Length: 490
Image (cartoon, rainbow, N blue to C red; front, side, top):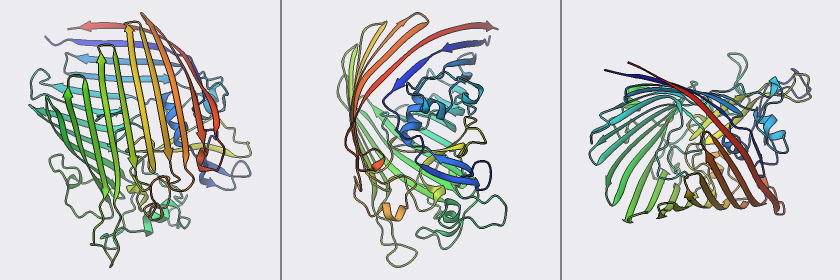
């Protein structure tokens, strides 16, 4: 007889953090919805540095209610309802604590995780699963993957995975925010020249044949076909961004790889080859080569073509002892990686964050924060990075970690002009360089866990401005208490 199991969980997790935030809350004004409203600067939308966005989502919510239900082992529903501090309030705090100190400091953009999952034939070599809702998608093989990426905390997505003995197929459909900066307040008004809304209506790419696609729609499709053996695995992956028009079945047909629809103007595709080798037990070497564009003599006009645009990942994971493991990852991304001439075809997940933190009578009233997450390597284009991680668990209650990083990134940003970025070499312009070392410890006893991080950060040319090296102390302390109830019914 089928059984229904449900659970309600509560987490309390106060936290403080210093050292990893960008010194500036916002980089610039992304949009002005009403220049003559509220404060003398108008009604603003601000562009948030990627570093702030990444660190904010890594900060735990002060409290969370978790709801789950399972029908046998096949069907499940899960949702998290967090109480989280507002982004700007968190950044303004010198110690980076996560406790809201007023109603205006409560994050109104939650929840971030809520989905349903159906798993079938899980005990056979032909099993699979379908998951739909708001959740993070991980296609591996590393946190620094070039495919889909780990930068966004969640996607509005459908993920179907199917195993056929040694073959595995993954299909992911992600619905993305299609809001363009510079969109007029009224129908019939032309957007400001060179704004994103204007670019989508006026710019074209090779072979677009002057067709314009400017409807508010943006979706990402990922197909991954992999073959697994005791030696490792090999995979071919297609990513297709479809923007400026609603999806048709011919765009996302799950059983078609390398959709040859000649959809220039509303589709941008990239191909990734992935190889993982296991030469001995406990050791895994892996590589990804992502080709977003390959130079071709064919163009809409004579001589018009896009240059080669690549991303490369190389990594090694090692399990030295049952309780000791290490990993090292090296990443290269071209200055135009994830970028594109048409805004709705950039490989980005735009999250429009609403806030009640600022008062309407403030000199610069802003209630909207724009965060553009790369849908590839989590730090975006124009990067040459090296990451090292060590995990050691001497006892079930204790876990220790060491993280080292040498990160270098050129001046090219995802919102930069694509044609300019495509002519640059890696580490272009003023290079931001960071060297980081962090040690961590975690102790768990029953429903209580304590975590501490201590580290050092040397940062040169922050935000690509010529500056001397800044030396910063990294600290984080948080305590998490979990409580829950479970019930089972036939």
